[in-house]
Image 1 (cartoon, helix red, strand yellow):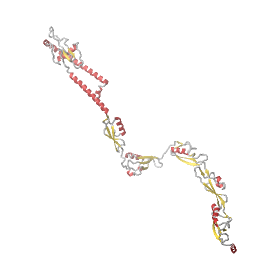
Image 2 (cartoon, rainbow, N blue to C red):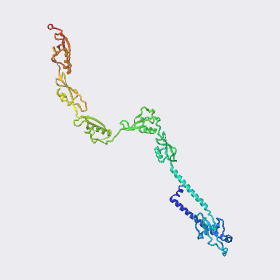
Image 3 (cartoon, rainbow, N blue to C red):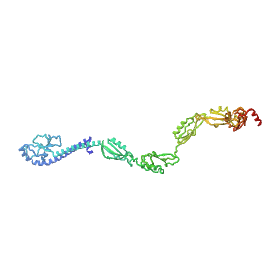
Image 4 (cartoon, one colour):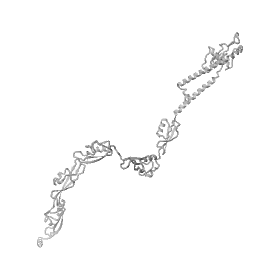
Length: 532
């Protein structure tokens, strides 16, 4: 069909037309040659009948012979060839052959050959009005007409077919086979080709999500604007209960294969470094939702199974900076960024400002690897050092405290002489920085042994408590007293007797004190003294 239609386009049409004209000329030439041969054969018969024709011409001026007779055809062709007045008709397919017959002259002999004037003339239809001319029809005329209309019909049919074919090609498109391909590919194709798309999604264990399972039209043409229905996979059913294996007995590769086979995409494998577990071995298993148990685990539930990557080994490609004199925060930030384990120590310094680095364990420009450890010493500023107060007197203690608070006390002591150092509450040499809470240092000096005074005749029993506390007990001497009453002319309640007085006594002593009853007169007192 395409070869036939190509003859009607451009240069092919002109070539085809020219070829047909040449074929027609060749055919006419062959017909002419055949006619000439027939004429030569028929001339003999024509001469034989010449006598009869002359007699008939005497009685009739014009004789109309039968159409399409052999004699008329031969005479017409002869006349057409010899007559100088003969002209070709406009349409060579429609030829009318005429035979011109002239009257026989009386003086001409009966058997004289035909003159050249008696020749066949070809004249167009409806142009000859000479009654002597005989009109004859071309026997191939009807066939040519039928062939002509057949060609016209075939050309029209081809044109209509071509138009319909073009219209069909413009309004229809072939649907490829999308089964097993991504849904996005189908959407792109339908958008480009003007086809509507209806997607029906179904769970399918064998197909990944968004993969085409089935389509209504495949490898056939569909009219643009029509609807293409496809079934797309939603993947495996997330509501299905999955029986979990014993991951403890599995290696990393086996766990990955099981997850892939069961399409348990919500079960994630976490690989982490471990110094204790060998690479590829199981570490632990966790289900994100605590309400979900291993027995009723569904494909939609999220879980994690941990496997070891072995001990992590890093290349030493990190250059160590010099943090001396820099802040603690700078060192901490650098260590965090480079995954270096940093240990911070503190120390006082008279030269380095508080909060800045005094020293570091790894030197400048040393190459280290991730996860390595280093330490830095950060200044806490100038420290306050607790002095040795044994080197000072009680009066000098406060002034030699180096800015620390000191509370000086003096206590009785049987062994340490008066004024000498006994103790201090904070150890010698202890340092306190600016951020430390500083205590009050208790410094004790000795009063020596306690000395008890004579309290007789001028001290009342009621004053004994205050005297013994203020003079002895408050100063570290555990000196107490015991009271007994005696008959006496001295005012009642007065101290009249003491077991010890006006002497040094141990810090742990008990003094016996006699208190007057005030029940005797002076004379009775004298007689009682005498009796004694």
